[in-house]
Length: 193
Image 1 (tube, rainbow, N blue to C red):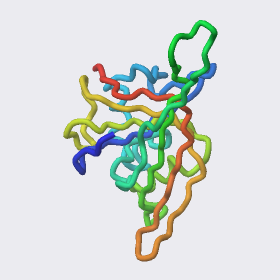
Image 2 (tube, helix red, strand yellow; image 1 turned 135 degrees about the vertical axis):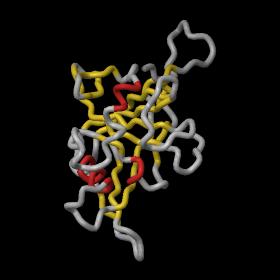
Image 3 (tube, helix red, strand yellow; image 1 turned 180 degrees about the vertical axis):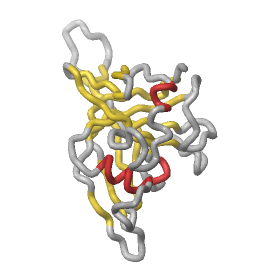
């Protein structure tokens, strides 16, 4: 994935649930197929930037809390190269999509502040919470610009892990969230209305 111009990137944590082994995105109006989310589905989460916002306990827009050293994107996928007696030539079948999902954010000095950094902390502090990470990287859109039909988004299904605090010398206190990838992705998805 190529880097975008600084300031034009959006990262959402969209709550998810598995039903019969299939993950679904959650919105206040119901479940959404991760293979076909719409702009309206994402626009529920884009305006949520602080803990006091409605539905902030479920998900939100963490873009401006995330430091630019993030690791979010596809890596080499697993393949199966086993052959039958009828196989001709070399062939491989894709088995799992692999990706990295590590986000670092600054911690807020005031743990009770109604701030974006505390929203990130609250959404990622407990292990085993299911999310789709929505990532808009193409185009010149501010992180709070609403999603529109025609935009491309990437979605990665993850579970949270234990959040790790970072204490570097002469640096801001940080929260590091390395998510557990669940091998379900929807990359370069073009939104409909």
